[in-house]
Image 1: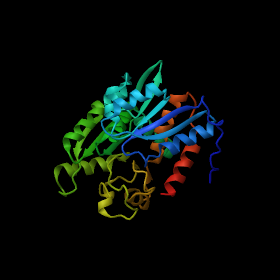
Image 2: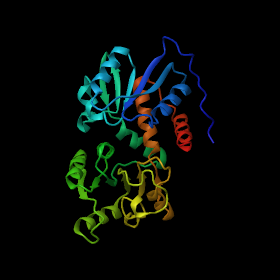
Image 3: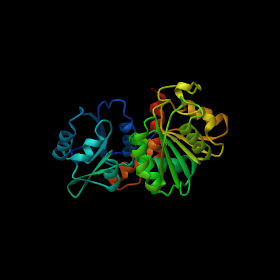
Image 4: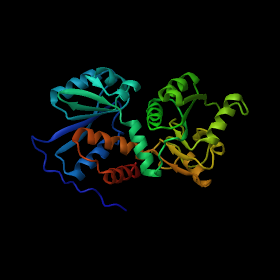
Length: 304
């Protein structure tokens, strides 16, 4: 077991720099645990807090960031789109996604980043060592996390990114993030043998990587109840790697089903840690202490 993080920071003073996460609600956020551990491990004179900001108040929060000299901001729901519209400028990735999860102060300007996609790739490499170049991928779901993952997969050279969602129009929007590599299918388990389900079954059977970006399984158990499974696990090919972006519980029903079959399966904690690590480095210019962040996150989740 890894040693707990030792707080190497100097005592707080007027020189201590402040970073924060805004959301509504935000009390459940692991960001203070992750970033607090990173600042403590590196000894940087920074502190990190959670600020509950009501929906619709993103502009006021950014004004406060400027006025108070806050050095970095994490952004969670429901503010990601609103912050993207209110910062001074966004990176190309954040602009394409229409969502910001990290605000960086650069030459007096507030710059919006989205670290979710790169965080996913970092987490995948950390857990499985997989390089997605030339790989066939199926992404289940079409929400904000799915879109960021699709964008990152295409940017990293995945040969095909199939997006399956219960609303086909949303799947098509998310698949468009992958350009010519993207393809959309309907995620419909209610019509066995149906044309679209057959296409999805074929895609899952051929996929080298399957990503669950739906909320199915969140808050459930590892028992293989169909209500906790986004797809029939038997459809997933034996040679695939499966990543469930859910990080609590640590083992979802989908992951348990894969491991019974001897298929590599990982949860979403590494993505969560790695997207926060990228924010840490953007703010400080210092390499993030991933081990300390992982250890702190696991301890926090174990106590919930």
